[in-house]
Image (cartoon, rainbow, N blue to C red):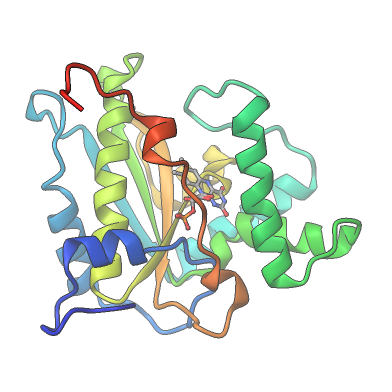
Length: 233
Ligand SMILES: Cc1cc2nc3c(=O)[nH]c(=O)nc-3n(C[C@H](O)[C@H](O)[C@H](O)COP(=O)(O)O)c2cc1C
């Protein structure tokens, strides 16, 4: 991570330097550091300051049980049971971007297009949340399920969380692979029925020798994304 002259990285250094991390050192992450990351992330704005998010922070045996259950059920072809709505396959530019990042990751990892074994291995790594020492499952209160606002708020806190982690030398990958088999996550994380599982975030100290960790994903330009209205120039 690039840092400024002072020891703490600037906001822009964190945002521009952060990448999804998919290879971790086995070192445990101190609970105090995770608490600080969550506390910082929860400065995220939310609709009417409702703060609908909750966090189940997993490590050790319970997280390992989720990895095993996830892997077994996915290999057995158990249909996915994510608790948020999806729209089916991506098409057009969205599909192109999905393919671009997959190609970048596979190139870094030396996974050939037709190498089924290595591709399967990569997918299974995802179901194991890339063997990260910590996984944070983000949930929200079921009493407000059905609106798009709570998932929006959870997105805000998740983004703040990965950046707060990065600022402290921790890597993360927000991932839906880890919560695809939601009953497994619910059981081993002890998530009650009054919570909806939104997403999970794998976290740990980055293994700098893991090739995929060096991948920098591309962004569309401001001109592609933004329409400026009412400006003079
Ligand atoms: C809602 C969401 C779900 C994601 N799910 C996965 C996943 O299941 N597996 C994975 O490897 N990455 C997953 N990612 C990470 C994205 O692939 C990644 O953020 C994107 O390619 C941009 O790369 P960057 O984070 O390195 O900037 C997810 C990200 C988000 C925001």
